Length: 133
Image 1 (tube, rainbow, N blue to C red):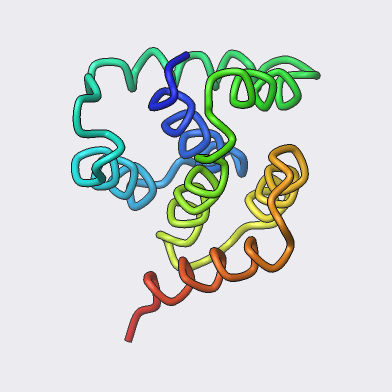
Image 2: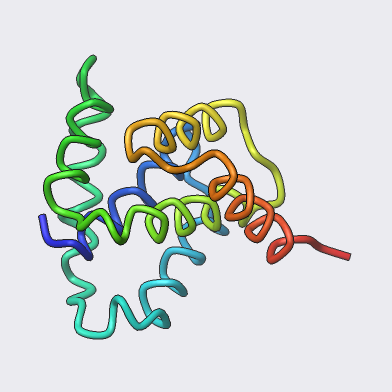
């Protein structure tokens, strides 16, 4: 998996973590991939394959561990916080965080060794961006 594939994988994974992929989450993923500079040369046709990989991994008992292994192998450490920020944006996009999404984000912080204070700041930023009137 490329670094960009890894970023897409964490967004798909957090969306699928509660077993209900919402349209709002999919639109957020699409918006992120279409607008962020890190995806400037990304082939959108790869999203389907990355999604299939994530879904296949989630079918296995050790799938989450395998997913984070792929992420650590394919993503430079300097982009771990970027991956966490994107996952937080997708999780917050529908206005409510499900227990499974929170558990996934907690596991992600642990697996990618994201500092507690940095994680809290990223989470607060995502929450602020997705508030409604």
